[in-house]
Image (cartoon, rainbow over all chains, first blue to last red; front, side, top):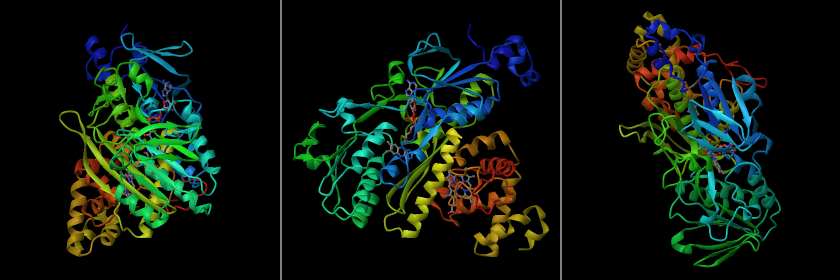
Length: 425
Length: 131
Ligand SMILES: Cc1cc2nc3c(=O)[nH]c(=O)nc-3n(C[C@H](O)[C@H](O)[C@H](O)COP(=O)(O)OP(=O)(O)OC[C@H]3O[C@@H](n4cnc5c(N)ncnc54)[C@H](O)[C@@H]3O)c2cc1C
């Protein structure tokens, strides 16, 4: 039987508004069930806000395949020795202890949309009245000729947190003077637009702090321009001289093939050799979102910007990197912000609680060198067509003084502590 | 200046306002704006939702970071004056200016009443002046 929303239920019984004060569970109805797939930046936040808002009136189940979560945000700072691995790794213990959330450690294999059921790899079936899909991204290995999941063990993408980040760190730590690093940067849209360039900054920082004079970082980009380009270019010149070289596709003419074993990237222009290859391919929504038919030709999932509700299914919300969120970049901050809008709408659907106009926010900080932080960000809302558009924006300026850049970096430290506490605390 | 003394509810934001604006005339203007916004009254459910944006940066644990100040448990008039100062560009921080620019009067009212009622916790290694 279909679970009724509170509005439908009270209407059915012909009850007036006075009855709305009575929790639906007291009226003999089973609690509505919400399943959240993915316990990352978006999913963990959604589960928390659902449980907080429902105050026990909803069963919230969070399905996550890993037992802990290593953030991609700040993983570049780990690569640059500004952070240790433990400080970017979070357990689900506090989320489970402090909130009314059932955390299931398992992999969601299939969504049966007609039965409103999530099937896990181990055979468990989870029925839902509303489903939040937050699986993040999948890597399109085949988008880079010669690259594969197996090759990523040698030439890591490190664009998903955890072991990939650690492989890249080990390779960077083993670098010797005279050996080079080559990064292949991804096409739009991808998670964290300034991420590759912050990472290149951290690689150059490592080279410099080891005292190496003959090692270089070459970025082979498939895009003719990139996020915060003016700020990065200025910072690279100031701090790293000619250690970082960015090569646009107009110059290298295209990536022809990558050979992880020999550490080479062949382009129209030249064949580049490196001791450390960091290959960041094109991306798409996590597999579960695609197999459930929630994505479009772009590989990501269209949603209504007023609610983050899937355009394909009214019982499903898609948040975070897997969604097409208009003007919002794919970031942990965006995912956290979208999760709150989705949770409010799920509560509205199931408990008839108040739903306010969607407002979103994002700031992406990047560290260029020690104490030299920059930021870009915006506030957003949904327009009449349901597209998410920005209402005010800001970006750090070139030529800012060192004190301001230090403050900007320190803000990001405060932000990391706050937002991870909001997700996992 | 005189107005500020005859309205005790505004008293606690006097210092903030005087620190933020250059002239007595603009202080009076600010005081009026604060009063107008607070007159819109509380809406805690709305305030709680809007505060979901703030908590991404402003932790409720006071020792999380000194670079991002504690905003919970402060008087509504103080918070309103601070948000208006960012909105008008009298106080400069690109992030907070953008956050404040995107808030209308009703949203500020809902937020500040909710934030003022929200408790914060002091962490173990706190150096925050809020503790
Ligand atoms: C190098 C780098 C730097 C970055 N820096 C920043 C930054 O400074 N600021 C910022 O805001 N963002 C940053 N980001 C982006 C940020 O990491 C992502 O945008 C964010 O993690 C997206 O959140 P999400 O919830 O959509 O996905 P994720 O955080 O990836 O979470 C998805 C979760 O779902 C789980 N999962 C997936 N499929 C299933 C399934 N079928 N069953 C069960 N579990 C499943 C995964 O295990 C994962 O835990 C950075 C990213 C990178 C790569």
